[in-house]
Image (tube, rainbow, N blue to C red; front, top):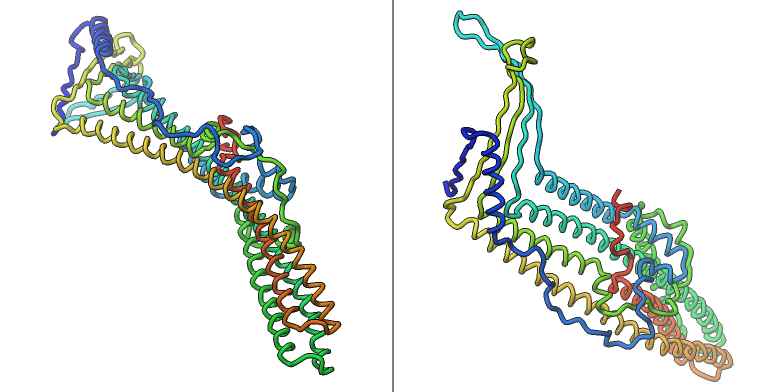
Length: 482
C-alpha cells in the first residue's frame, strides 16, 4: 500500500472539546496552507490593432449575431433558423451542455455536508435460546471541511467545463449557420449556371440549324456542320452534371435543417438569383473578434478548468478532515423505541494524511501542470487561427470582388461579340469558326460570372463565420439548452 492514512477517532474525548479541537486544527492548517493560484493571465499572443486589409466596414460586432439577415433573403433566414432548431449537431451540443451543467451540480453538492436516514429491524436466535429483537432508526450526518481548497477547486473546474460546453454550443451554431448559408448560395449559383448553360444551348442549337441550312444550300462545308454539332453536344453534356449538383445541394440543405434529403425539392427546386452581397461589412476590431468567437472563449475556459485541476491536485497532498455524527433510536421492542433511554448519539472527528505514496501525489500535480500548459498552447493556436481566418476572408473578398468586376465586363463584350458573329455569319460575311469561338467564349465568361458571384457571397459568409457571427456571447444559451 502506497499511502497510509491513519484514522484518529476522538470519540473518547468529551464531545464539545473534540469538535473545538477539530475546528481549531482546521483553521490553523488552513492559514498555513500554500494553495495554487485560482486565476492566471492568458498566454501572451500577438493581436494586431487593426486588420491588414483595409475595409470600409466599422467596428460593429453587435450586428454579427444574425448576419444572414443582411442578405435580405427570407428563404435563407428561414433555413438558418430551422437548422439552428432542428439540426442534430446542435441538439447533441445542447445535450453535452446539459450533461456538463449536471456534472457541475454534482460536484457542488458533494462539497457540502450530507445527511441520511436509516431504519432496521433485526431478529436473532442462538441454539435453543429464545429469540431477541432489535429495532433501530436514526440520522447520520457527515462533512469534510475544505481546508486546503481541493473541493472548491474541483467545483471551479466543473464550472469551467460547463462554460466550455456552453461556448462549444455557440461554436456549433456559428459553423452550422455558415454551412447552411454557404450551401444555399451554392445551390443558387448552380441553378444560375444551369440556366446559363440552357440559354447558351438554345443559341447554339439555333446556330446549328442555320449551319444545316447553309450546308444544304452549299454555302457551308460539312466541317462547319460537324463543329456545330460537337459544340452543341458539349454544352448539352454540362446540363446533367449541373442538374446532379443542384439535386445534391438540395439534399445537403435538407439534412442540415433536420429533414429528409428530398424535403426541400418543392420549395427550393425552382431557380432563383444568387443572394446579393451585403452593401457594407459588420467588421469588428481584432481584439473584439477574439472575444466574439466561441472557440476562443472555449479555449479560455479550458485554461481555467486546467488551472483549477492543478489546485485540486496540489490540495490532495495535504491532510483531509472529516466530521461525522449520528442521532438515533435503538430498542429491543417497538414500544420502547420512543423512550428516552433508547436514544443513541455519537460524534466523530477524524483526520487522514498521506505519509508515503511513492511520489504519486506530486506526479499528479506535474501531470495537471502539463495539461495546463497544453491548454495554454491550444489557446494560442486558436487565437492565431482566428486571426488568420479573418485575414484570409478579407483577402479573398477583395480579390473576388475585383475579379467579378472584370468578368462582368468580359461577359458583356462576349455577348456583343456573339450577337455580331451570328448576324455576320447569317449574311455570309465571316466563317463559322469565328461564330464557334464567340459562343464558347460567351458560355465560359457567363459561367465564370455566376461562379464568382456565388464565391463572393460565400466570402461574406466565411468572413462572418471568422468574426464569430451566428451566436450571442454571454447569453447563456439557456433557452436553447432546455
